[in-house]
Length: 315
Ligand SMILES: [Zn+2]
Image 1: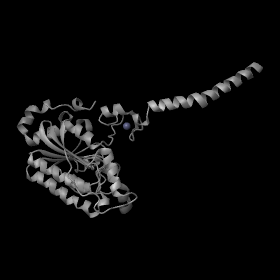
Image 2: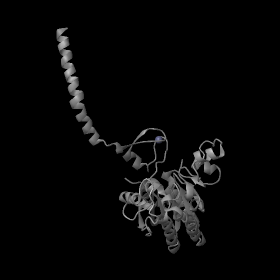
Image 3: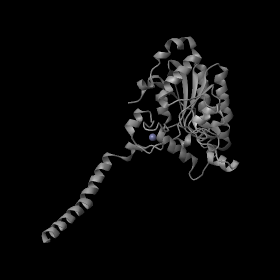
Image 4: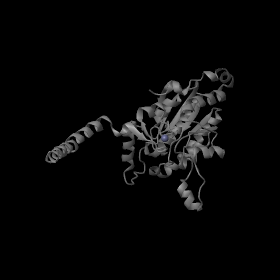
């Protein structure tokens, strides 16, 4: 037993050495090699997803089909033929006209957003190129920039996109991902609602397609203006689309709302959305719609030859 006791002491010492010295070193090493951002937890099914695998599937969970929110640039790459497009600059607007301050200064929030997305950026990116061979201007929201909120820069951007589409006889495709109006710009942000309606009308009056692709989330002043005016309205699966939040409505009308209320599929069933399209099929579907609207005879001949979404996925 004495030997065994001696062995136990030796074992304890070894275990102590392992836990106090070796383990922290291994943890430090592995932490350096495997940063947390390599994995994302899926909010739909709670599976851990490897970031490279997610990028390859256009940020869609392969287990449950949950569509993660994506940035404006990624959206442009996915929608245009071969991921090729020319970016258009956002028109300059006066920054922080009300010198607004909530918990932070508005100017500081703008600086933070622009530090992440580049100088002069806002919650909207504009580009032109071809989709299924048809000329198109795309205006895509970036939810990461102040919740995709619509202020003067976004309003001006949508007007500029509409003008460009009319000048170049291109279709206009708008992809909202927005919490609504930008409260830091007060009434000036609300004024963008009628302005974006006029922008949509410009394209329609020119006889060009105006297509809206609703993504998660499309709410508030955005859903109450240009986002509901598409000639054709598409939506990504599971996207929340509505004006006020479900909880606010429940508290106001004091009634339980139906299951999946304000989701893309619910809106499809109730006639607000024309088609719910999984992200991997968006490019081909848009190409098909544009070809049918712009050149129905060419479309009939070339539809099967439209590039498959797999052919233009990022590496
Ligand atoms: Zn999932």
